[in-house]
Image (cartoon, rainbow, N blue to C red):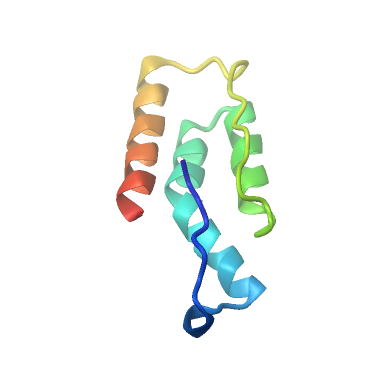
Length: 86
């Protein structure tokens, strides 16, 4: 799970900075969805790229994307990269 951690008063960031942090955290997933290059994945990548910094979670619906096992591996690598960023 990707979460936003509470910041102390010395670590406050602006809303724009927070949005950039969240976008950077999700960048491996956004890139993976673009690499898979299927319409459902491209739409999900676009949605994630435009997400608001106020949203702490999201649903990734790829059930109709006709993913192959190689696509699943690309997504697994992206989730691993996100987990390692924590």
